[in-house]
Structure formats: C-alpha cells, structure tokens
Length: 330
Image (cartoon, one colour):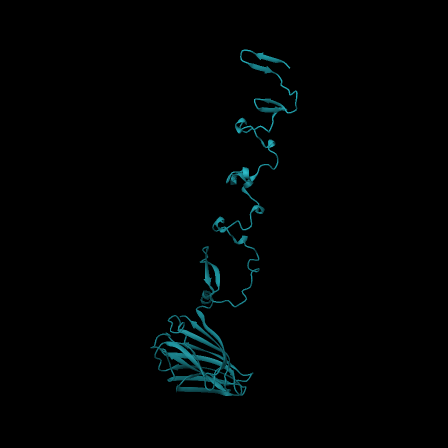
C-alpha cells in the first residue's frame, strides 16, 4: 500500500484501504464499508440518492406494496389501454350513480330477461304496470293496464263482472255510481250468461233506475220469438211493470239461457230523452225446447238520468247467472 501524508493539510492519501484483522469491513467516521457497499446496518438518507437512480432492476420482485401507493395516485392514464377487466370489479360495486344516462341499451339486456322471469300466475289486473315509449320519442313512462283497455277496445270499457250463484232473494240491483250517472258513456251493454232460474220456466225481467228512483210502471216492449217446435210468435206489452228480456227458461242441467241487452239514448244523463232498450237471447225452455228472440223496450215516463237497473225473475229467485257490464263512450 502506498501512503502519502500531507503534513500541511493533514490529509491521508491512499489508493486502497483493505480490511486486515476482520471480515466486517472498514469503518470510517462511523460509516461501515465492505466490498464496495455501504453495510445495511447503517442508514443512508434519501438525499444521498441521485434523482432517478433507483430503477426497477434494483427493486426486488413483489416488493411494491399497496401501502407505498398514495391514495388516488393511480389515474385512468396509468391504466393500460384505459381498461380494467371485469374480474377486478368487486361484486355489486358498480352502482347506478356510475352508469351514464341512456347507456343501458337493448343489446345489453339478457335474451332471457322476460322468458326467464317468474310468471304473474294470475289474470292481468287494472293496477298492473307496463313500460312504454311515450310517443316513440325515447321517453320511457309507465302505464297501468287499465289504460290499455280504452285503447284496445275502442272506448269499450268493462265496468263490472260477477258470477252469481244460488240467488233466492228475488232481484239484483246494479246501481254503482262509479259508472252510472257518468256523462262519458252514452250506451251500456250487459251480457247475461248461464242463466238458470230458481223456478222452472221463469222469465228474466228488467227494470230501470231513472233519476235515482226505481221505475216500476210505464214500460212498453215488443219481442219477436222463435221456437224450434212452433211457429214464430210475437210478445208485446204496454204500460207494464218491467221489460221481459228472456223468455221461459228451464232450470234442469240441460236447460239455461244467455242473452244481452243494450241501453241507449242520445244522452244517458239527460232526463229529456227517451230511455230505450234493445235485447236478444237464446234459451232452453222448461220443456227443453230451443227458444230465441229479440226485441225493444222503453220506459215511457223517461224522467231522470240513468242510474242503473234491476234484474228480477217472473217467479222465485234469480238462481245462477254470470253478468258483464260494459260502457261505451261517444
């Protein structure tokens, strides 16, 4: 080893300093140096490093932890191709707040979206809801099923439907103010099905509520009858207590009747106009004979708006029947 001592500046100059008595390196002013490296037992502040001098080759694999990454430090620009595979999303982490408006298209809906859904298991009710494009302008709105009936039937609204069994009280009244007394209907059509009177051979009669009062006088009707075992007959009556809308119906298992009647007037809520009825029916009579007919009738007093009607048999009770009431708008 060559040593040069500068006596003036007290500087020791040498080409090499080698450890002699130990294998732990050489210590100079508390800094331990061994094999051209600073021993790790002694610290080196970051200001000793030159900017950019620590490269990836000197960082051991798997040694950059999440704790070394600042919050919000990874931006979209740091993600390759601005893409994150779906495997990295936590289940349920994408909420509606992070889906841009109008970005869910029909192509993104599963093909089994409807076919895979649970069946409603019941008839469609008025309160059931549908989604629709309002005016084909891209505005999605809901609509109740009750609105579809007015569109599909051309202002032909089902107002009431019921099945009556074992009726022995003598008559049934239909006077629901929810649809009678309304100015938006100028006709009502009533269907009677599977009529089986309590008494064999009973006729089905009709009376009207006009001006909130049941009318039991001043009826007139004219019926054209057809029977399979006799010539055609005419049944007419004036100034009677009701209109006969179904004739002579049997109550055996093979006998029943069905028919319909229509109430019509220029204005149903106007007392000045005559209240008119037209009707038609087919039945099996008490003698198991096929019978049919059609006719017209009215209440000649005609005072008061239509408030409803009463069904009654000529004898006994009404027995069994089904009824549907429709309102027709003008």
